Length: 288
Image (cartoon, rainbow, N blue to C red; front, side, top):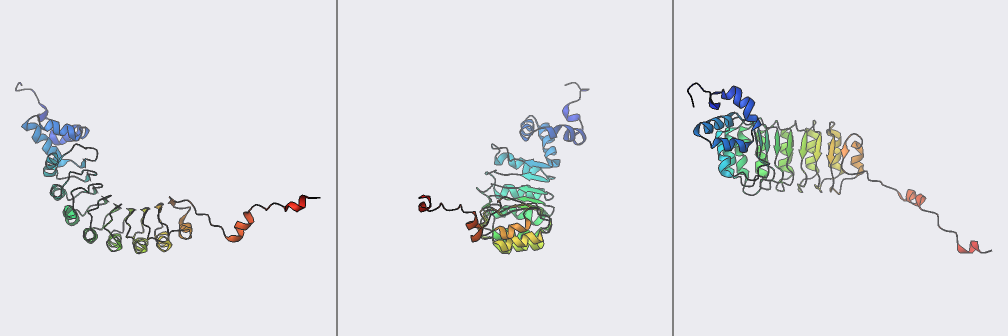
């Protein structure tokens, strides 16, 4: 290359390449370019340092070795989506979380193969800006982890704990008390939950708009009534497979809230008799 020629690496990295070029590249493109030369590796690593989003949910071939590059170099990530990355370990995640304690969005849904609650320790202690937490199907999530999360976090607006079977009324209620700004709560198929949690939601989550408690069969009309009275901004309620919830409580909010269970038609004995078809005349009346 002639001395007066300009290469890609001479263009301003921060003002031009990181703003106008790299956002259009996939992670696969970045990793391929990183292998070209030492200068390319340095350029990509510097981009990872300022990168805001890490989304590996669609990368089924991603592995731990590649992830270490992100964990070491990323320091300004705000959005982290690692759903269904079953190769993740506690050590890999902790390194990423320690370097990115200003993240606002975290999705670990479906990462249940090798993880434990230990991976969330940096998130609990350091990531005070967290607003969106999705831990669907994270069977490793424990009661103690939730208690610690409730102790340290107060700004969470959306939480998804679907199928987190180890949780109970005590730890979930404490999280509801701590995070009064919650707008979306998914507690579906946490079978230990009862009206206790629903009452706390009605008392503390005044801004709640979306609630999913599908499959929480211990919840009754008493709990739903508390939510109906306390959560005035509620827009959707998913309540299927809650066999003790009836129209007695759902009728309070039906009309202003979308409910995934149709209206239950009740009929007393006298209405039932009135709608029965008239019996045929006795056969003797037809005989002249």
